[in-house]
Image (cartoon, rainbow, N blue to C red; front, side, top):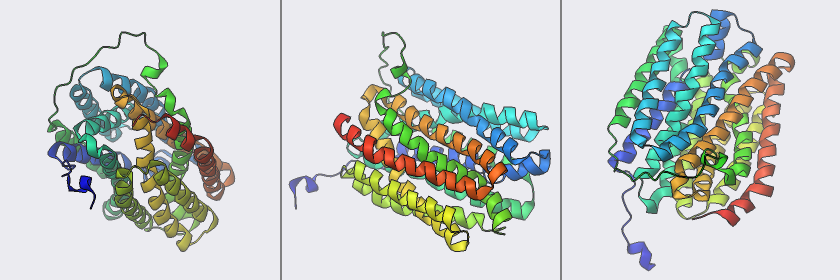
Length: 398
């Protein structure tokens, strides 16, 4: 046995980290709870067509993009607890807006506004989570932290579909999302943080105060991966119903996706702790690419459900590896900026996926939209293998 194996490890699951984990789960559970049924809601309640649905649902990404870069600057420059509590409260409050939006225009406005506190809260909470992690287990902790939003993203659509099948009420889903977000706000209010010295940067404001310039290659690759996910997650329910005649299987799809995410995160977190960041990313991107190919090419239950498990396995390896890359490329004083850059890249891809997916499916059908998603994913894999991996290894700081 090696000597360092006898050294006790610092505790990973401390109370503060667990609270931030739960708070992050609640952010994504409440937000993604509405995802699979919003296209049907807009179609049935407001009579919106596919292209309009894509435009309305992608609106939140615009404000999320605008605020996330600013959020990275704010959490690095001001007390993080104050930034986190304020943004989380506004995030929860926006769910009430869906309940009172009586027209398509008002709904589109609320949805677009909601992107701002969503973007700010995810940046602030993830930065706080990194702060409360022991430094010796940070890479591993980042992997498990990401598991919270992966599980929430996979489980919440299943819960939404089950609730809607039982009660046939969209308003009930909005109330459940509001209640869940308030639980997350309470959880994050219990986090105890040490006061930190905030060093005011006397340099003039520049782009690198808001975006991690060094990580632009990683960001482009992430945009490609999230584009594919944006198309799939948004149109999976309506595609299954209209094209495959699957009325109750979307919940199982997301459940299989969650199983894949959980399994790969458990394995991936251990390999990240061993420093195998680029290996995790390589494996994850390749597996995901095959999953999207299976979904686009095989139009039956095997392709539908098999792709869910495979994409989950791939994304569970890929996302924490990329988050670790962004953190390891940044100075300690730029943690917020690194997190915001990762999430900005994800939002750009998801927004483009929703928008382009709606346009392509309106004019060429859902099959063409999913082939487009696969093609963009392939582009991301090529970018990673030829540009990102070598750049990261040459420029990482830790």
